[in-house]
Length: 373
Image (tube, rainbow, N blue to C red):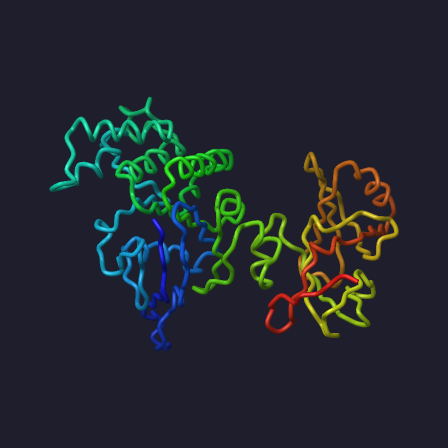
């Protein structure tokens, strides 16, 4: 089911009596969600992603704009008539009911021509349980289940009525790290099998990037960028998007364009063209550094952190806006770094990978395109 959001806006009254203007939670959101895709709504707390989900579900009415499921305008339809499945952060299972009874519950509310026999309901419940791999737990109560199992029950309950649109509101935030990884893989598998259009809300950029067909990056109710996860990561539209995506986060420096060169401090780190002389912010992804004892970019070596396959070189530079610079290099180069580390005032030098370097305007923080000479 295609979902279309047209000029979607939600305003709430301001609780500060000294301020008369409304608080805009979602500001003029326009987006067409393709049929059968998994879309990640991503952003920091308070950015409007959960409000957007609630607008799509019908739990919240928009101040302006329209919502379409396919060709049908559902803006004024109540949630129960929209054909949605909704999974909350806290699972919202009925504690006195078994797993089977929890999954059956949505089907028992069907009326008229949609009403099912007991045998049909049980068949659908078993199918949904098998889909999320909890069919052996049907007689247990929620208190007898792990957090991951409870989340699967909530997903099965949302899927059992085969909704047109599946809405997931921070569904993994209560799980530990290992369960989060396992459950997000299950969500992706289930979505691909059912081909249900799915909207997944999260503040965790790694979650969104790993399972989404497309991500929507939001801040303060405004959509900043929409695209395939890797494309957004490789080509952020502004400094906010660049800083929000990536673990470890991007390193940001004060820089200058002079004589067709990019300077960070006194170091000419790249030869560039197509950009006027000016002060800029320079973003360098952690994987954008190449260890080279004759490299153009000098940093004060702090320490080396071993991460197994890779190592993280932690250094500092007076032009860096981050507390420290993190450079991810292959673990095979560890000996080279440790040799550098032996000195009292050790300096580590890098060359930069141009595709991992971004320039941003000092005033607007919009990305500035450049070419490498």
